[in-house]
Image 1 (cartoon, rainbow, N blue to C red):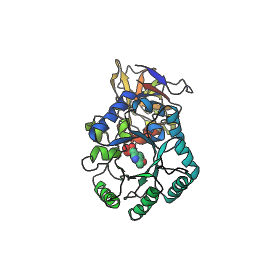
Image 2 (image 1 turned 120 degrees about the vertical axis):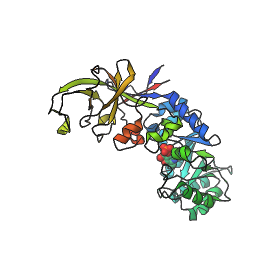
Image 3 (image 1 turned 30 degrees about the horizontal axis):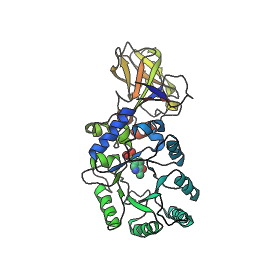
Image 4 (image 1 turned 60 degrees about the horizontal axis):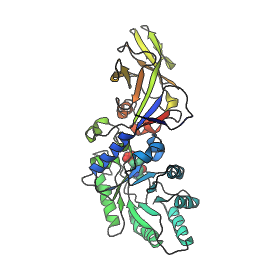
Length: 382
Ligand SMILES: Cc1ncc(COP(=O)(O)O)c(C=O)c1O
């Protein structure tokens, strides 16, 4: 096992995020097994869902392309040597972006008319009559009502881009692929999409993680766009929902106990005296707080995994007791008398699914992973 540090600009506090590149490779392979005939845009926006772009090149090399939002992130990936396609999921933000996107060899989503104008301007300025190198993924609003062209205008816009020399693919995004009873349903969005593109040439791109996991029998497309499942977490926010998919957690957020307190009956701990005890207890103070990205709103009882005498494997869950503060969290370790300064604690990861923590804290794994602060060292485990 070798460790590479992404950043040297770190504090010497014991908190760090261990990133398992084998797990990332494994999860990508699981996507392939579930939808073997689709090409994969591995979604790495938001700094690869908080994991860092450094691990992407080697661990996602089997993906057919990477999808993200930011030209700056695309530039980092090219500098790191990523030569396969890159898709800009929100497309261009200005006419100038077109040139940067071309320089970086990016494909782009198109979801509003200004972007169509910018692409037409570029095509007009081009000297040769060869087709445009940049592929565009035209986004249709099939009911999510966030981004995309309405089905009624879709064909007209398609013909503009097509006539300008662009290779145009068709794309939409599902609002409720992780729910069974919400509208618009996957079926409904699929129906709108299929009708609107009927007879048009071009590839398609449909599924996010939820659609891959739970709708792959009915939703097929040339390209799929998995994000959260690559990182081993659940699109629905519930760990039980992905247990069958055999995904592996990529990030393990680990730290250590830095102090022990013995509380008597009637004592309280932390800001606002949120946690009060009516029996004597042992409290461990751990080096992790909201400035590391841990949610401040995590209530008492939110689980944390504390190493046992033989290490993490023999560990057990201990509950948060007291308000999460900027750099510290207090947990009740009364049942773990061996727990002491230096004992390793996992906030989420191999032993404690991020979804379990998210459920207890009233959020989703996406938010916890993306929020891990830059001051937390990221170490890749090869
Ligand atoms: C357009 C698009 N496709 C795919 C994804 C990946 O979604 P998920 O992480 O749920 O797989 C996202 C993420 O929000 C997205 O915006």
